[in-house]
Image (cartoon, rainbow, N blue to C red; front, side, top):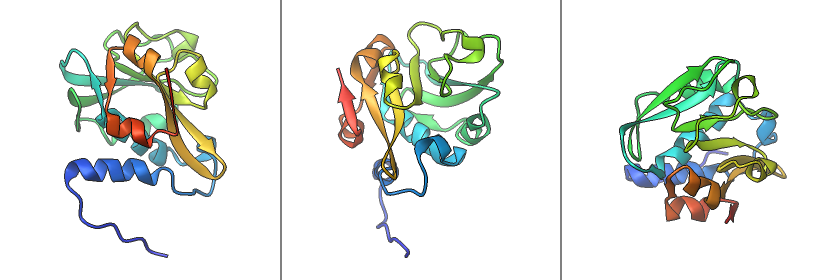
Length: 173
């Protein structure tokens, strides 16, 4: 069955893409194709203002993570605060320029090292928010969505768009 989406303005298109993440999927978040998770992550980043603006927003992802290649598609695109720079980091250390870091399930990042302070952490599973994560990609039933931890986001200097927060499955203080 085909779904028809009316033409949307660029901002509306991003919101529509986030809304589509709650459409039933054939698998859980842990088994979703990397390009789907990458699209969700990119659209979340578009609606997070990282202060102070620097003209570029560095997203770090471990090189051993299958999501690394899928996220490279978004390198150079505009996000809140500047242009997105996707940086694949080695297993031994995070880059000090990381403004956002994807933390793979079951790890604290490359070689288990914690990312630099004031880094917005994106990971998977609701328990990720309990481990100082800011945004968690979660599966619920046969759907995939995201949850937000406002306190962890504030520590990273992030301001979440109210439109993004309305689409979140849960928002924790």
